Amino acid sequence: MRDEKPPSAAALWPEIQRAGVGLEGIAHRTPIITSRTLDRRTGCTVRLKCENLQRAGAFKFRGAYTAISRLSDAERAAGVVTHSSGNHAQAVALVGKLLEVQTTIVMPTNAPATKRAATEAYGATVVEYDPATTDRAALAQQIAGRQGSVLIPPFDHADVIAGQGTVALELIEDCGPLDALLVPVGGGGLLSGSAIAARHLSPRCRVIGVEPELADDATRSFYSGTLQSVHNPPTIADGTRVSSLGHLNFALIRETVDAMCTVSEDAIKRAVRFLLFRIKLLVEPSGALGVAALLSHAVDVQGRVGVVLSGGNVDAATLAAILASDAE
Image (cartoon, rainbow, N blue to C red; front, side, top):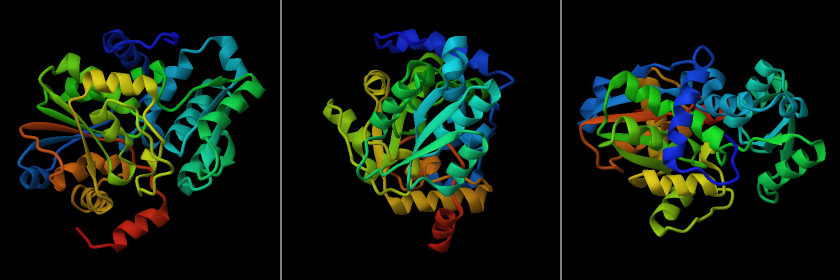
């Protein structure tokens, strides 16, 4: 589904359902984990959707596979270009390997070493850029034009959003209606897709996006009604280091999301430690944003609360620094 006219939430819902069918036997139907300790600390009944256990270590595999698998034979033969700090990069590279599509990934020089290594191991060509001086989307567009390849952006794309929406689709199918759903937000693909699925499967569910205080462009955009940006935010949650929401994502988020909140860097680190030490789950900082919001009481929710743990790709240096801080 690659129409020039941006689709509405209603139009994307059947695409999310179709993506769910297309991902059967390809993506992992990731488990839902519970924790009595987390429930006790938050006063909620929490359900953790473990996309840290997804193929390539993050939810991004869903969107990448959905988008690339829907390309024509001619488009696949032309190859795919994208830009990403890591998780979408790995996902596109893995899907390229599975579907025999050549992939070129524009990655920042400060991308986590483990994410770059995995991207290259899947066979992608990596093109580095300096995030302080270069617009990664513009660079990717230039490369795609020069190569005649198809650009698959990490979030501002209808098929990518459809694939990401299968996270909430599975969560609600497996655990039933929710009172609230907490979703990390960077560019907005996961949040917009998940909100659409929640609206159809659990209409009374409050959908809340969570982002770092240091990368609060989505929150400012949501409450101002105008798309805001932030340049190269210095947050530990590298998956949220995007300049702004995608235009398509912003429109869908305004239509379907109930609220936004932000969390501090310390809250993110505490959430990563809590998930590792108490629940035995390795979750990257971006993936722990929802738990950070719960544990720091940055959001007021009650009842049955779903939380998307969006990824588990964290390099050794970042994890060591987090674990060396105050233990949970």
